[in-house]
Image (cartoon, rainbow, N blue to C red; front, side, top):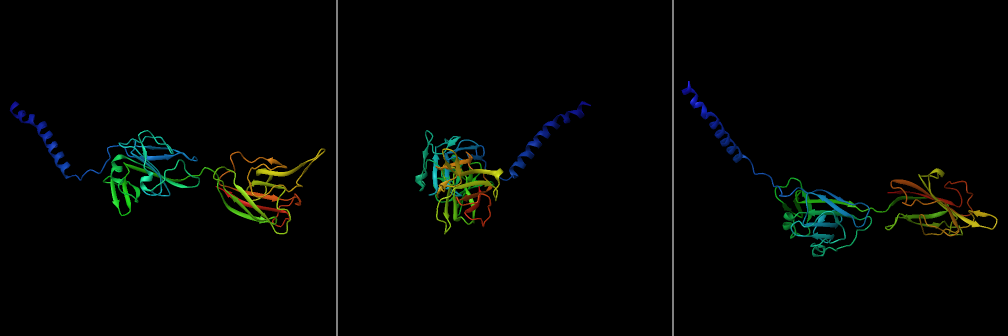
Length: 319
């Protein structure tokens, strides 16, 4: 019986050799493996909102270049306002715009840009970061739009006026800076004012109001004004209300002095007036329609129609 068992002792070894051979053949028949960076992929670029010198963070490791362009595109061109470079992926997160880390340079001017210390209100910016592997190829290619290539087989491809950069080495984010409220859809009604403009501020949440009194009305000032949420007057939704005040020794007279003149800021304090509703400290609410009204000392203090003498109003939207 032992003579029959001896050949079986070689079966495990033969099976192992056959497995190794088949694996080698299969490996030779496979296509080349796709391009992979030696570092983790860049992703999740995050920029602090509502500040002029935001913190910028990203995932996937440190980088060699961090850029900020004005507009919708990342590029090595005249739209650069920051290009922070440190060799060997020496730019670390978080990075604060307007700063220059130790060992880094701001190369914006080398590509025709202009280095700025802070961002500007209501401007669109594109933020981007790039690892050393891609930067070594891209840094010599000016005036080309840089975009992420999610199916990259090489670090960088130059395609016409566009650079396709592997997502493992490049990430970008485009957003608009919006620190203070904005105004749109201003519509003027009534007989008191022939024109009303409401202009957003780049330094506060207090827009500027300019009004022109209609022809035939002698006084260019008004006696009272206010703001309500909505498209008509509503005492329960008042956001600001100011009325002229004449303090006498024995009484106080309201509404009878035209002392508020154009232009003025929403929330401004006027001599000879009382604010019965104080303007919100944080400004008006975004994505809300408002009703701004004016009246002079001859208004009947009751009716608020478009045809009401000595009364006028405008509706507008905050965003």
